[in-house]
Structure formats: structure tokens, C-alpha cells
Length: 120
Image (tube, rainbow, N blue to C red; front, side, top):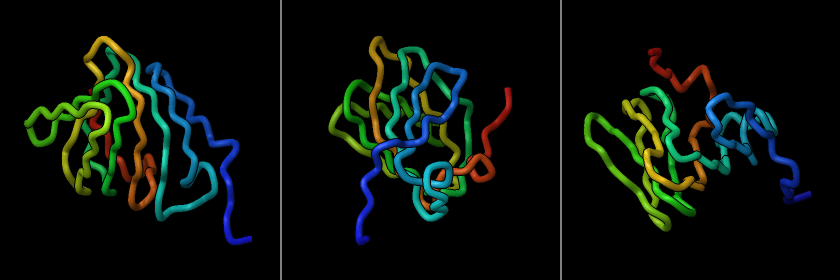
């Protein structure tokens, strides 16, 4: 077959209220080249700084998302997208009043071994 429709994405277990559905990637179909995930970040959500070994593309569907990249604060709104180059120190958060719905694409695919999140 020359195509595959994803009907049951992998729901990534989280402890921070963020919803992650990986449609394609290592957890879903073993693909190490690319991952595509649908995310919902609740109001007040944030992650630690990280310096991933993959390029990450983010497209905002609704709400707003904050990025801190090398000390610069960038805020994206619905309809905007960003590419963050691999080996760039970044922090993702949603300090706003409404949830943020977005798609994330990682090249190569997201992996905890490649994300390099900082502790504390």
C-alpha cells in the first residue's frame, strides 16, 4: 500500500497537564527520521530549558505559545509557525490565559535521548 492513515496516534503520558498525540514518530511507528505530534498546552504550562539534537517546527492552531531562545522571548499566535534549529537552547511555555493547540514536527524524530532537558 502506498499510504497509511493514522487513526490511533500514540498518547504520550505526561504529568504536567499537556496533551501529546504523536501521529508519526518513534513511539507510534518506529520512525526515527521524523515525528509529527498534535499538542495541547494548558494555561500556565512550561517545560525546562532544553537543547535538542533535532530541528523543531511548530505551527500554532489556536492560542499563543511562548519561546525563550538564547535569552530572547518570542510569542507566536494562531496561524504562525517557527523553525528552531537543532542544538539551540530553548524553553517552551504557555503563560497565557487560554490553552494553546499546536502541531510539532521534529527532524530527526523526537526522542528523550536527543532532547537534553535541563534539570531544576
